[in-house]
Length: 97
Image (cartoon, rainbow, N blue to C red; front, side):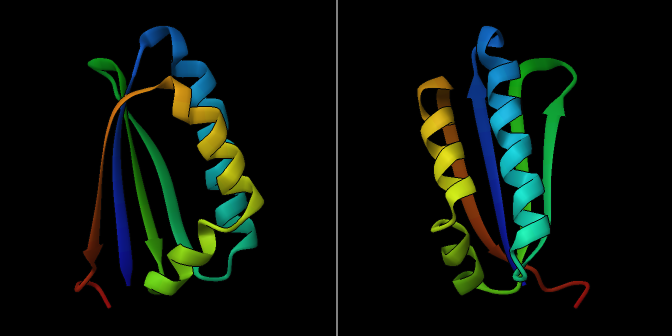
């Protein structure tokens, strides 16, 4: 399994707009992409502008396919001006298989 962990910082005034486009992307990814197994959008209760994505795909190719979807493009365009800082990591999940 291929895992994407993306940490975002947004201004508190932009949080709800960011979460709206994130929710749409996450929901559509799980519902419409056979290679997307999980897409969690998480918030830090102590840091209002801190948002984390935990995404699980069958493989890196499934993630590349995700980036070509309309819902990802909508998220990317809608969120880009709201992001103050981001850090994206790519991992191979080894347990459980």
